[in-house]
Image (cartoon, rainbow over all chains, first blue to last red):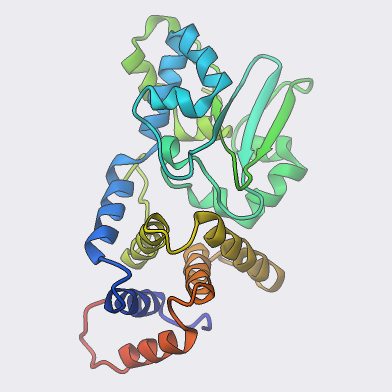
Length: 190
Length: 94
């Protein structure tokens, strides 16, 4: 199929064949779309982050076993069967990528943004993370270490960002509003 | 819309994602098998092309490939169906 092929028609042709063969129910496709348009997204990861900021025991569990910890918040599912949460500290800044395609922890962050899937981000963040971060507006101290985590077939990563300066005065719910998607990938400091 | 961003640029992308996920959930292939095809599509595009990155086209290509590998949808059938749809009269709603 060439670049001039209308993709909508290509997708429709495939779906019609799958339905005819009894392999697919279009209503199931509808449900997946609604789920990912409305319920699966970074607001889930934000709840995890806010809880980790306010509950030190939960934070320890989260860093030890991300999958089990997020299950405490009824978060689980596709692409997040093995979740590792990496913590930003005063010494280390973490950054997540999938160099080969677009692997991403859906259960906590939803579907990835375009720039995350883009060849430029995927190759450059491994080669020149500091420069990429600067382009995102993140300027780190020169002696701060950067760790880049490349998602594999097995593992998905999420960053636990450092809390914002005024975190002490905020409720857990208010903190959840402050934890952004980009900070959980590692391209934003709060 | 999630995080203030549109998840899919066009309805067909949602259909493609929804198909890929539901078929994996139904056990036609594992997500790793699909992922291997996506990695190959991505690598092929990166070796040959530049410009706007057509992610969901590659995703759809990977889905077609894994379904062909499983014998679920033969490429010839898909092409025939596509051509039949192409010659539908104007005004058909996609």
